[in-house]
Length: 306
Image (cartoon, rainbow, N blue to C red; front, side, top):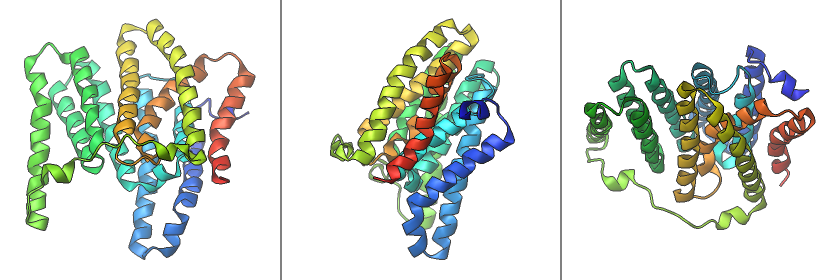
């Protein structure tokens, strides 16, 4: 049974997830790869490796902070959600921004150790700032930084100024690089993106089916996730809630995104994978668990037929 195979965290599970992503990444970018010059092919190889690295970081974050049990559910779920949306596999900016957001999340969750807090706040803010250079609305994840700061180290006033210092440092680096490369200043217009509230694209079945499925899965699994948070220890409760906050911010980014093609949901997949993994771990109906798991894994293949 598939759930039994992924119930452990072993190298073979990670290899299977990487192959699974590779298959759908290849299908999503097949046309571009055939007509692209050699250097673009290497660029696409790099993007695939970034996706695999993102899975590894997600697994590390989950294990280090005890967000889930020691299993491979979150890895294959993240891959399944990702492969449902071909546009997410084609958008290099979103793929890179998501990697930096995962690096930021790692630093935010580590604030509970109460060690090197200034460095961790700076790093988390800096990575979110870098992510926003690729995808502007990911800047909203600064709310997660300030929530983590408030929960763990909010009693020290100087900590509240660290995110500002991190963003100013990034601005200095970006401006200097822009002056050296293009001899122009990096402006607000270069950074920001417009808000688009037109969801007409979601009437397309290739977007409507997976988004409706994820919406239903989110509502159902979030109910159990909240119950899990209530029963968790005080130390684990804040980390679990931060994941829920990340999911909320990611959905907000998706609503505000300038392009509605499914790639804007990329930032939602990692927190959702953790939420659904907790639901799987608490599920007692093995038959329903297996059917739901198989549906998530096979739905990307069925969507290719559309």
